Amino acid sequence: MDLDTAVAHPGRATPIADRTALYLDGQWAAPHGTGRIAVVDPTTEQVIAYVPAGDAVDVDRAVAAAKAAFPHWSGLAPAERAAHLDRLHTALSARAADIATTVARELGTPLRVATRVQAGLPLTVLRGYAELAAAPPAAHTVGNSLIVSEPVGVVGAITPWNYPLHQIMAKVAGALAAGCTVVLKPADLTPLVAYLLFDAVHEAQLPPGVVNLVSGPGSAVGSAIAAHPDVDLVSFTGSTATGARISHLAADRIARVALELGGKSANVILDDADLPRAVKTGVANAFLNSGQTCTAWTRMLVHRSRYEEALELAAAAANAQTLGDPLDEGTRLGPLSSAAQRDTVRGYIAKGLADGARLVAGGLDAPVPPTGYFVAPTVLADVDPDSTVAQEEIFGPVLVVLPFDDDDDAVAIANNSRYGLAGAVWSGDEERALAVARRMRTGAVDVNGAAFNPLAPFGGYKQSGIGRELGAHGLAEFLETKAIQR
Ligand code: NAD
Image (cartoon, rainbow, N blue to C red):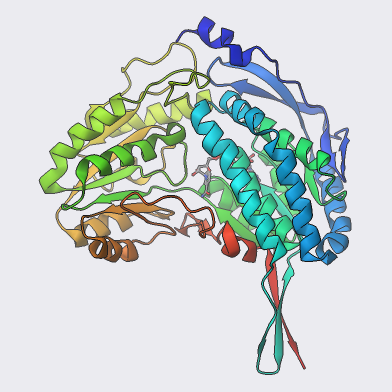
């Protein structure tokens, strides 16, 4: 791929319109903030559109609208809220192709993956929450107490760029289903897909103020949401460092926080596993979305007796990942989201090699397209489990492969992390795999390549977060519990 091919791709023939308004109180409204954010296509390195940069005054306007809308929205019958979410689903489904192309352009996710994950998954999540909205948790009695669940109030949602619509939907659909109202700040790198969602919100005629959009920088808009006295719950997905900052802001007024943060997940391959399948699936998982996935299995742990065999398989799988234009059907690996992200990831590869890692695939000199923020899929072996590349979230296509001696050793290495988001175990003996899975200190573990379940609770132990998203557990994050004695 060269720059001309990328720029000239027919998928880029349609220009993306600039956005000049925020979505406040049921209408597109001129921002108070005077700045704008340039959205860059990481494949061509060209600006493809601008969106407004709101400010703290815009946050005030959005929160006031959400607060005013709360009594009506929370008072609707469950079936009425579900009907609103169904209409939103219809309006958003009609935009699925546009969503996939937009994320392929603003983020660089290969179109095939963007269609399935970046567009398809949020629709599945919205459908699931529409069903949960229709059947909220029933009141129950404990002795002389009636125990009821009530929506928590105004939710401030702050989201990152790597699965931009899914991460928005996990919050917005869950909050709306629970009867909360929302102010959303999407990531600065990928705001365009959020605007498509609000086109659908407008078309679906959700009541004014129920969901509001303020794009803008985290430092101004995100922190204003986190610190706002009328925001009852701050639901944040992003880096652990920003999550900590948001927690501090919310703590000053004892506001609730839900945090979905980083990860460094272990893929544990026991000696009796189907090694080719475990390694191939593991490499694909680690490099999904160019490795910019919080749950990515970025540490592959392999029994020492099969370590060299696993490295050969991992190198072959990494080298088979086709780098290129995300809009090409054959592309498996697109660019990283930004020049800064590319430079960070290259810095980690250099650090790993300087710390003594053996380069098995990729690396800093491997060929990549001349334009775009590409990093070659990289596999590092013989890495010290305490070293930087084995401990820090790299958020790029970099896999470290570590040997272990027995199941206890595997569990100890897997749990040697400040994160605890996800993980995997592979074994010919499911009971043995389950025993290891139960000992892993993470919010999710997949045994033998089991499928992602969008209704299962999603969230992290340790520094990977607080709380859960998705399904009934996700809905519960947006509810308060009340005991009425009689
Ligand atoms: P980030 O923390 O920089 O930004 C996330 C969001 O917070 C953005 O909207 C940003 O504008 C905003 N923000 C930044 N500074 C802020 C501040 N001071 N106050 C309020 N808001 C602020 O993260 P990112 O770079 O966008 O995303 C990548 C990170 O997110 C990775 O660490 C990844 O693991 C993590 N992540 C976690 C999950 C999860 O579910 N656990 C999912 C996706 C990404």
